[in-house]
Image 1 (cartoon, rainbow, N blue to C red):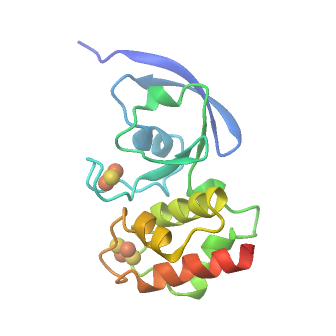
Image 2 (image 1 turned 60 degrees about the horizontal axis):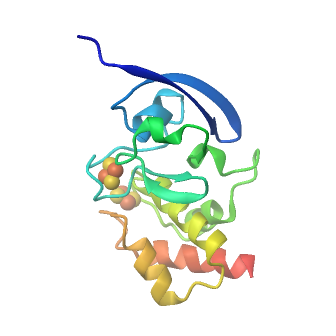
Length: 157
Ligand code: FES
Ligand code: FES
């Protein structure tokens, strides 16, 4: 028996998209199938955060959200953050502070940091550590990631 599908409408990185999705597909798989392959899929059970995308501006684990839950909502992936050739300040700070090595975790961290600074521009050091510790990075040891978030926060201020 074929898996049931449902037609949904969403806005992906500012562009309206209509698609037919399997009802059990995850949001991470949906955005990747629509070309937003910067969204990485790691553990697929909500632990690593590498699949983080923004749903109406809020970070969510793309592997834990069903694609059909994006109906009528705005989804931002790493592809939607830069404006043309201008990197988002968090992206620039990650480059300047060498906050990535293999890069697998980077899209999730950048989106998490960008949404934190949007929603809590004056986030304390403890708050930044708390939020960024929800995602896993096996390479950097976190210090450069935290330095990059602080630098992006200072630039905004
Ligand atoms: S792949 Fe979604 S949290 Fe790990
Ligand atoms: S840079 Fe490799 S997992 Fe984070």
